[in-house]
Length: 364
Image (cartoon, rainbow, N blue to C red; front, side):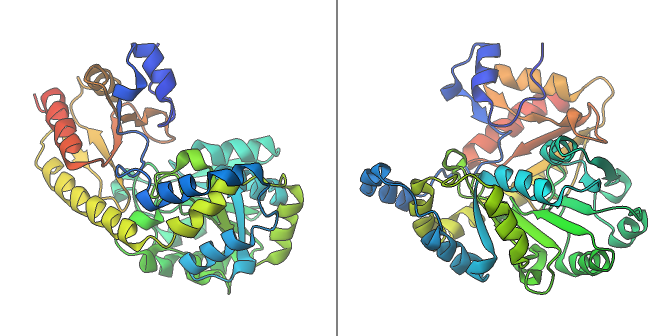
């Protein structure tokens, strides 16, 4: 049994399989900010530990205000959730599309939720010949008449490619005319070279068919906090989601953390500088290798393709796990095969060690 299909956070499972304590594993598969959670957030949680004895504000007034200030979006358009996954599930459940298109390869949870709601999924393939970049005109021509929802991750996981705001607006305008809802997962948007050029948040007020979902697991290194938020200007949809959502699904510490997390400019800038520097350095190095193809990325991870027939993604995964390094074997993503690998950027010393070990496996 080979654990190539495990989620990036399944360190317990991987550790048990390979008999390695999870604390010793270096996780290049989880796409989480290597700086860890902000010290200011830690302090806020410690100082407010006694709030565990209280229920959260069921309306999440302070939490929505914090998100509103961070995103520059009207607080009435914001809905907090127990991680991005809860909001993805609830939005799909509310719309309950009979037919949906997912830009792929991408996060498998989208397709799972559509199926759970008895919908049909069509996958729109991002093509390697185009370096997995999204072509809006090609996509519009691909959309069947009976489509009720479009789902995309921007930047996309696992390709790292991102759709710019101009193309996003073209797509949203077309979908509005056809009564198609568009859900955009912006989990990795803070890692892009320019949020203004890639985030669809500024389009929210003028497009009621748009639902954006974000989380704090990756950029803010807080997967255990389970804090996500949705943004939509159709308040009837938000009210409908709220009516289906469990009360107090977001814990009180998520609310406390948000008041510090989203305003911690020093942490935000430090994270961006680290990721931008490491992304450029790693991409430049990988492009020198003769046995791989490197795909440009706007995220905190990178996708590569192995070009030697005698080396597979499984082999690389197995060789690295011995070194206590976990990468993502991307062979189980739609339209990808056993020659694709994805790994995220951690601290410089860790990244250097990963590349050195990968090079001994691939560049032989």
